[in-house]
Image (cartoon, rainbow over all chains, first blue to last red; front, side, top):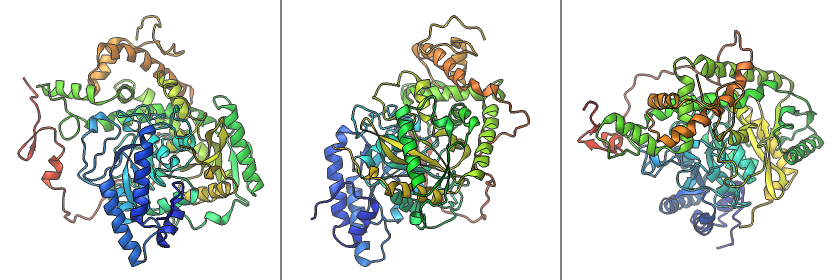
Length: 487
Length: 113
């Protein structure tokens, strides 16, 4: 068996599989061996599924032998543990769902299985996807592969770390306020939050339904486009899903950025942003300009300053409604010691949920409660309108807006956990896209003190192909994506 | 809302009380049926006040006559499908994760004592 490069892209692995240089079984075994050797120090997986992986790999080899196999056939993957996998433990990072085995598959689980990808396991995450550091996982923290004393970001910390560490070539995450882009930035990989609705959320455990979106983690922009080809589209099981405008997101990848209008948002290069992160990001924009993009260095979004406040009203409010279903009756943890329904309910939710989840349920319940609804929830929805309109106006001037993805590089485990308001500031650059429902991609753009920095590109709804084109042009003119942590 | 002087760990807010009262925290906990220990109530008194201060910037924004956005994508409405029977999930699948079941039913504990 030839030696495998654990940092091969999806495309490279796919080419090697189709050329029969390596079998899907060998690829799966090598990745499982690497997970076994390395994940103890990283914690990117909440469960590993070797038997299923080998059986799916054997099916993939049969498909590859008979010809006509698609580009993901035999390619290993991970899925964040808030997406349903039938019969396989799906915890959402919570004790509440520790033993939960979903009776059905998420639409994305089915789509990737049908595309021939091989599931190696489920990705660690902040409990119910609430967090920016993965320290809220009820099971174990995730360690950043670039410095294991540091966080990988969150809430999709497991997927970001797994891809960065070469444990899988791609993973699926979910992004409610930055939970794909921010950890992608902190771990030095590519992460895309698609347009709201473009990827079905059937089988995604709900957090904040007007904001949640599934998207890919990969090591290259082209790989993210390949994964999107497999997971987008209208789904009869998700009435908020929308049909894509293309069936092949890789088609325009090499079209370059000549003439592309790029806007720089000044609010995201000043106060609250680490000056070194701003410097690295500005250098990346200059690079895009040298590649032929037309850069407008001043496209202000003043209302977006309120996006964090809008988010921290809307997300907890919707979470308090969505998490009302955990009653200890139909599925999930149930306190066996209480004889009375109401006491059992309170005690089940007291013990089953962690601190951050309870805090958000409490805040959301407060904001929605009688007498406060207009001042908080309705007010936040009105400011949400202003933020959307501001993006609409900006996208009349430019095709793509650029900000840093995260205001800082990866911080130390434990550094921000004591103060939720300080932790929330990690999401300042990413929440506006969720508020507006628009797509955003984070692509590696350099390092500060040996830790990765991500560049965020935002576009209007359904502009994924443009984001891929711009991000790919930038990526291919650098070698950031070819640098990997030594483990 | 009345509140004692700020003694909480998370600092003061400029626009509201430094801490909610314990009764306010317990009232909210009752609404969402989350049991809290006395320590958690104490902790939340300060944390909730500082989180409310965090979102108070919204109050300064003029939203007169602005329609609220409940959903980020326009043109998506309640969807109807053709009334064609489909195979539902089996009873065994539905009950497979039940903490307590009795026959083909979820077992629920006593509502009234």
